[in-house]
Amino acid sequence: MLSGSLAATFQREGVAFESATGTFQVHSPTRGTVGMAGEGVAATWTARALERAGFDVLPPTGSGATGVGNLLVEVLPHTGSAQAGVWKTSLNGETLTHSSLYDLVAFLRTMPVMRDA
Image (cartoon, rainbow, N blue to C red; front, side, top):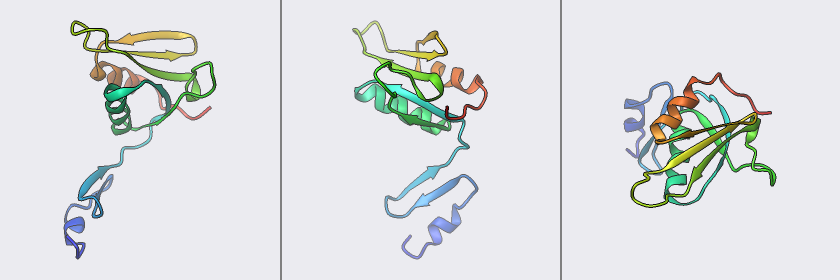
């Protein structure tokens, strides 16, 4: 690993081996930037999933809780064992809820590539 031969063996477009951490980094094409609001473990995993799907994730801008390019993803608090989680997307005044992280990412992937506003 120290000689760089491990990194060279696995070198592919969009994948890089980080020798400092011993991990692989997958670099997806950027689909756009989203604002994200939320706390805790669910927010951490949501941000990671969005980044793996090709989105740059930033905290919401301003006190009005709008995301970059008017897209905001909110990770709502869990309210008991019956509710596994809820994610809310807001874009140009339209709000949708998603019952799973998979559904959230699938929905965002259907959107055209977004550019920063």
